[in-house]
Image (tube, rainbow, N blue to C red):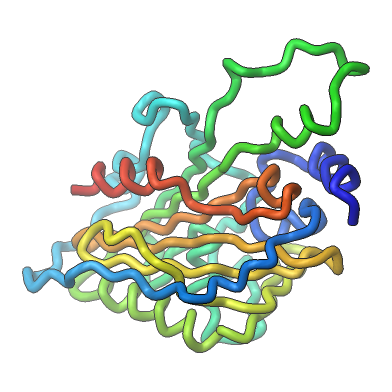
Length: 264
């Protein structure tokens, strides 16, 4: 696929379609990196007794809100995403925890969760050009923003620690890839590798999903999972502009740092 073709495809995509399932075809050449040399990230596990699980309402208040992170805007709910675990089908049961993390759903055994989307705000730099003067470069720049799906889930007892282990075990078990289906759309991941985590919270782990972009090459997506007490935060970054240029979609450090800080 030529870069200009990739830009046109991305320009017609719905910006709110952040699910891995729903962005098929919005890449150009895809990333050719294989995350070689990456490693699992981890923080120190706390020996203190696990706190009681928070309620969904309490988690909602802990999500980053509009105005709390300069240069970013917050969407309270992306309606294109799966509403529950039952809406996502995975071909390998062992891969479910990491797929749930990708979808901002609880990776562990709980239904108590909250999520939003935190996106770079470049509105102040918006182009004032007339439509006929917009170039391919302008289109690529317009999509060169990262939207991060943020999911919070809370657990009783040692449930949060078990959720973290479920994710890391899932990454190891699904290194050869998996397929996930949401609605009528199916997306295939060809490879999953551990990556260097941020070290945030009491535990953190990161991984890279190499997705097949509907026969138009592959693209790399970064996911990070962080535990803070009884709460687990998941982060999944999407940058259509980066993909169109052959780069990776990464989780902005500013987003994960601000969100984890709010959990303390």
